[in-house]
Length: 115
Image 1 (spheres, rainbow, N blue to C red):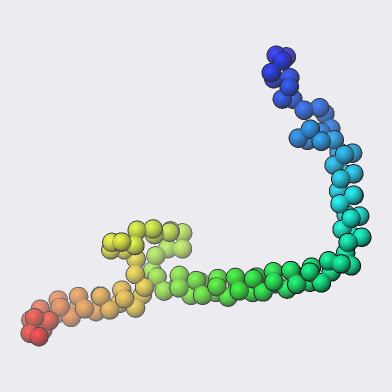
Image 2 (cartoon, rainbow, N blue to C red; image 1 turned 120 degrees about the horizontal axis):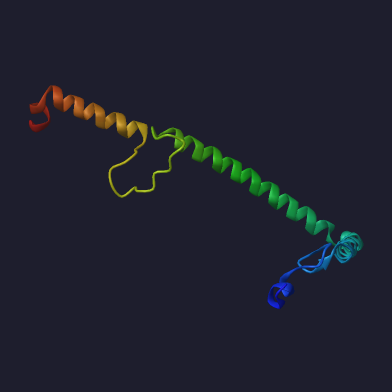
């Protein structure tokens, strides 16, 4: 095997140059340290958990909002329309108002010009 390639091959039983034994030892040491420091950090952990739970609740509320917004458009859920600078998908109330306006103009072209 050429030397440059040999240098990049890892030894069996290792990942990224770390043996399983060394990895498990580091995990065990970290876990033991976390358990010993647990009393001092318990309050901070609870505060962090509360903040995470609140962020999750906020994200769910935001997702509900955007789901309602998405339902206002006729575009397929499989598409993402990215060009909002020109004509394109519009909310259903706007679409129906435009259609009604065109229908009124088509049935009485003079009515819109009489103003």
